[in-house]
Amino acid sequence: MQAWLVVLVAGTLGVGQQVAPLRPLLDVSSQVSADRVAVGERFTITLELTPAPKIHVYAPGVVGYKPIAFTVQPQRGLVIRGLTYPPSETYFYAPLKETVAVYQKPFRIVQELALDPSLSGRAAPKEAGTIVVRGTLTYQACNDRVCFPPRTVPMMWTVAIKES
Amino acid sequence: MYATHFRRLLLASLAAICGTAGHPAAQSQLPATPPATETYQQQMAREQREHPTLTIGSVAPDFALKGTDGQIHTLAEYKDSPVLAIAFISNHCPASQLYEGRLKQIARDYAAKGVRLIAIAPNGPQAVAPRELNYSAVDDSFDSMVVHAGYRQFNFPYLYDGDTQELAHQYGPKVTPHIFIFDRERKLRYEGRIDDNMRGNNIRSNDAHNALDAMLAGRPVPVEHTPVFGCSTKWNSAIAGKQREMNEWRMKPVTLEVASIDELKKLRTNPTGKTLMINFWATWCGPCQVEYPELLTTYLWYRSRDFEFVSVALNTPEERPSVQRFLEEHHSAVRNLIVDTEDVYAVQAAFDAKWESGVPFTIVLAPDGREIYRVEGEADILALRRAILANLPDAGMFAGNTEYWKQ
Image (cartoon, rainbow over all chains, first blue to last red; front, side, top):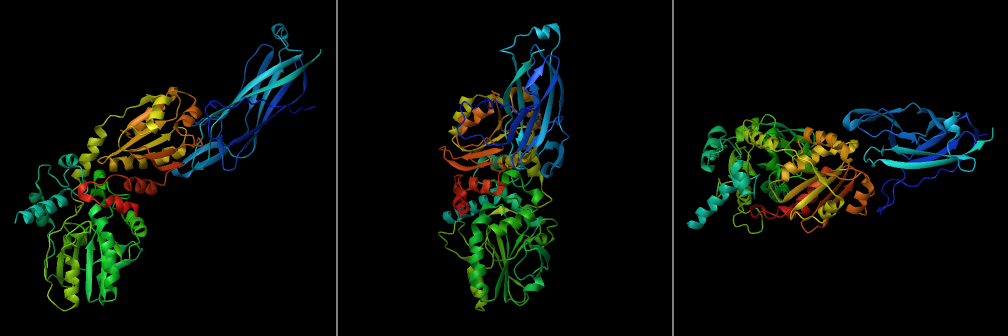
């Protein structure tokens, strides 16, 4: 069974002195593939991302801009496996005659994970039969006349460990 | 007698330095024409040899020139008008600008009497040095003429001769503005200034009006030739001044300073005592890269006046090499800053609470800190320049130009 978990977004970097509200650029939600996972079992975290109208974010591999990146914080007991970004779109920025790989439409990033079945993995501290997975999404967004400074979105999921 | 002598000197000085006006230091380094040691008298003598002014009684040289309306205009087109006035003017020259209203008035007032007024831009755009554009929002290219004529709502044809200057060579305008008035047979009856006061508020000799009135009444023109004042005609054969200025600019080092949030807060108050343009940009911002050269050009044009430009890169400190590279590619020899923190949002909040965080972000501050222009996103470069020009103090010689840009 797939479960939608609440994504805890602590905020973006440097909001302490913010006066003007941050303009929404990228709607972020997430889904974990199972609400209970056994040791040794694989599961995925899927980020559902929707750029605001006329906004694009830069795809992995672009040079000169800040590509979107999702990283899971390594920890004992958690195996970080493959990370999949979808194919990007091509954005032609006429004033610079430049073609860049971007995402402009809703897209999905999938992170594959597993609970470490090794001895050390099993010995990792757990909280009440759960494991807390922490990750960070960073991205930079522009439209055709303005760019916004890179943003960082801290995220956290709590996954129950199935008794083996 | 002394008054007359002084007046001649003043007019001579005007013609010699117009375009770099109001900044004597700059003028001595950057005369309008080579060689650098040439006096005004020598310059005028050379100009007269190389580009003699059409003499009274000469027949109007024919022309077929493109106008800002996109049409080709010819001398024959005006054959039915009993009097034809041809004014050589330019976009960039502050003296010429100050006469635009009076030329429109002539076109309007004398139209019913059959007088046709046309304006011709004689300058070669490539011969105009950046510092000579210090009172202008546009250069002297044909495209800029279209913009300028539309903005100032010219009610007369505005024709371009800047590429070949073939017509200018035949008429020999010494400066802009310089007016030539022809009778029905298209013989030159008056040539010179429009009137004797650039500001237009204390005119004692309304020379062009006097000539027009006399010609329409069938009387002899009372004074057929008057001395001109304005900005020297920019001949395509004389681009040394521009090259000299650009070489001097390219010699300036491109530096990059680290700035703290407190320093940026201080910058926001404008401690420079001058009109200050601040542009926030980043290497990860395409629109910033697009507009940056235009901002630098704006600085190049106005730097001889009380004007400063500070660029602030919102890149992180470790991105400094890419920032330096960009600045060097564009030869940004202005005060360049990079913030000393990764917390860009804190920088923005501290600098300006109304800033919604996008870049490019450009703000122009008057010497007293008052905001005279701001834009998040690419600046409308014409609106930006007009706002600056409307706030730069007048130099004494071109008093009235600030007001001109407020209109």
